[in-house]
Length: 121
Image (cartoon, rainbow, N blue to C red):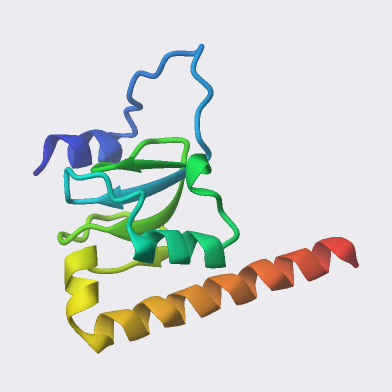
């Protein structure tokens, strides 16, 4: 079992400085590269009305952050992300992954719209 997954399962939080302002959203990916400027990531965040400056991009779960998108190749439980897909490279290869991404986006947008409607009522 991977060390970070074990710590997450045990509920152990990672150390973060109290001085630093935390970002509310997390995007988890396998790649060590900076994916924050990728056109697909920008498009998905835009559809979700999330600015990329509000997101932390990491390769592992960070407790206390809302996971917007989990695009790791290996699926790790618990699956708490709004959107769960294959890594970007796999998404760009075929249509099935894009279709599943679009379906999850629609579900999330419908969920957000219904929550907004209930708040205003």
